Image (tube, rainbow, N blue to C red):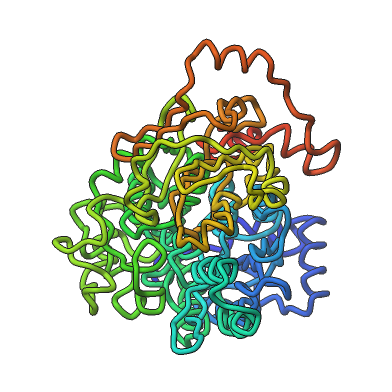
Length: 573
């Protein structure tokens, strides 16, 4: 570049200044930087780049990011910048209880305040496990510095007895096979070692792959970044390229607000729906858009879903392939090259002046992995938004991952008041659960969960599994893993914990699901519902102190993104 910022134009100059005339505080900052072992010529007058790293020893999705941070630094140094690595919360989906969703906003707060308070000119955000992608981008958007996102990348495919396994998706499948008596302990022990074979996030089109693809569609990654396998050497090169790029973005003063526009979010929604992606993306994209000052609603998802076909034949929405197949079939650039008429191509990205330039020349190399428009996996986007007296503020269903005969269904409710009670009693014969029953779980929403855990793929009773039943209509105010599948109605809003209609359902009440009509109805007359509502009493708060109490006081409902009210509202920080 020939057009570079002068040292005085850099944000970090406010901390470091130049010379004794810049004052005591600047002298102190320079002295403490010498204490760190850095020479003046290593950092003074150069863009200071924060590398926010969600690596930890207990997060298998991110365990390789310690090494990738070195590649980012390599790129920053090569471009003439000065990198500084900051550890931030890791949000391990596989270990953190009750759910990392409880802490997504905490990582967003940490990201925002760290970037605001330190002498940095731009940021590289390193994440990928489900909640880390939206958290990092939400926090960075609230500060509005130049930023590039580095996705953690999918793990290698699983293998077991000649079968290719998808993490999560095949875990649920074989766990049900075990409960049905089809396989035993020996097979399950082998599966333990074959399901997840390398660092990286889930290699299905689960929440992690969906959200990193959404980040690439938004334009905040280098092209093709979201699908590179975590252990591929291309992942190292991508990380270095992000380091190179962020320095140029600082010099150009291209901030996140230039990238995260309303058009960009519409394209991200189009991408998620065309990939058959996770229902969790609905909540996260709404929250991310809010932080960027963009209004995104459930109605936008439903409107766009009717215009975009599902072209990614990747499990669980597809039937065959995994993320490594998707990557080598062309990745997201190849996918986007098949729907250019559905995108806003003249908006900027971190890598190009327009998205049109970014996907120019992109190709698809395998037509069964990324389908052509005339042979889609499904004619409409993979997520439907439902309305009705059971979900006046909306609910969602990933209908392409459900058995078709259940997409229009009426059955009697079997109600569980919390997840632990459901686990204890789901196999009780006295409940009289049949394949036509509608399983209802409440007390699992943003407040009730707490944190809206991934409880929504309720287990099918053992006796039905043994009869060959593999799907039932299930309704909850919870979420479900993006690797899950089935006729699961999720994110019912408002949730039962705040007195939403789900709190009024009784076992035996008929419930009608009609995905084509986009409706979910409790077939009970209004007068009876009013009587039940008058008798309902709010449950006690989940927390009395600490972050949990702040969360309980401030959290919004699923339809508005589950952000904290004081963070979601507009205004200067």
